[in-house]
Length: 203
Image (cartoon, rainbow, N blue to C red; front, side, top):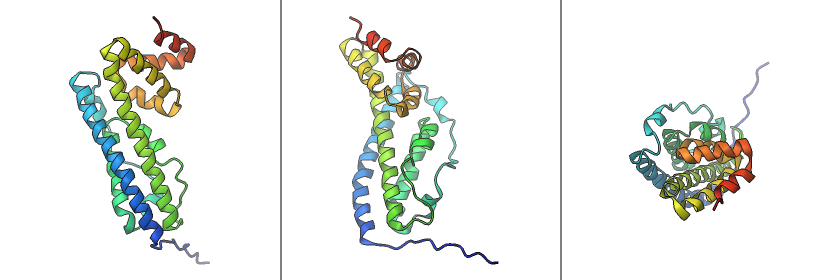
């Protein structure tokens, strides 16, 4: 018996135009964060805080990209291109493992979803990417504050402890954090929050 392939619903609507307009703002914010993140990466390399050469070991085999993403309609091609470029930039910074698990989380679409449903999933993905870029930017800024010493370093370590309280941030901290930041993060995992709090707030 011949089996008929289900029809994929892709109908352009005014709702998509609204999503594109909203996504333009999200994309602008993400591009800003990614640009500053890239600048910080270069400065971190100049100060030998991060070894940029070790982060070059990545590939563009993004096999974690869901099927629905590859069936996006032409009306969402600009936004789709931004997501792909952003993934490449973050992978270039050594965050392949992170983006493979977080970039498309909470995006529950399939190839058979409607255009509107896919637009919602795409919007969620952009928000995920923006969150990654914001956190990465914050971590690399903390690198300099920690090295500055004194009160600035103390405040930076408090901020780091807050970031590390979210398990999703730990992998990024280990990748983008300075040696002392990675050390404190590993210590936090081993001995818990209380000890790290006492260490940070030591007179």
